[in-house]
Length: 313
Image (cartoon, rainbow, N blue to C red):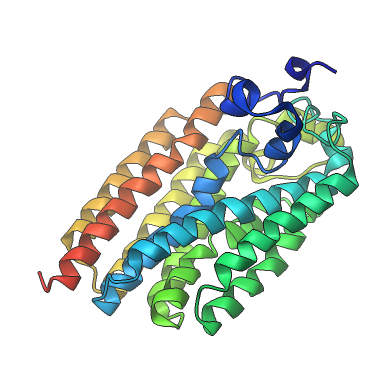
């Protein structure tokens, strides 16, 4: 099989396809380093939580290192999660147009090779986790239960996006666990808000596959909501904004955090206004744009933490 034919359908033209060594490409595709948006979306709640907790602590001394460690850990664990997903979903992926070119169904990697690569990525994540306190280590290990069961949820419930939200939002707890050694009410509110955000953006993502999913019996909120998707997005995104606002209030965040939340809200409102569920390219574009929305909020939270540490109002 030529490498051009081996490219994953919705990721052609990236650095993996053009510059990575041929032997490494299947593994980079398994970890989704050809499509890093998912790693960013896993990372952002970690960064939100770390910045918010640093503001509560009035101490930014460890925040730069925490931000770097979360970056490495998020990319490693998202890669491990995607590899696990591809192992469990290999038969389903072969039946969906967008995913049949993934490494395992396309014959670029065996299940055994993928499993070894999964272990290697998980070990990188473990090394990162061991840099934190005991409470944070235990909190991080607890997330593995949700990660392990997620791939099976699409077979049994119309709400697999909720389980994805539980997994992808775990970082909202981790920042508090790392910085403060506890999970308090602000962290729980941030976690709940992030879950609502994940349900919204992953519903947009799932609209790329609704026809194939309906044919092979895969369930999703995209199929559940159908033509009501815009209204559902407004509800879940609105809930995300309210709950994150509660987290900011409980954490005593300063005015830059509220500006960041306002920018985040504006971006989500733009997505709701633009969504056209029959346009797969637009759905992918809107889904990817959530990285920018999350970074806007993070910028506000970081500025707020800086102001709190400096004793400003």
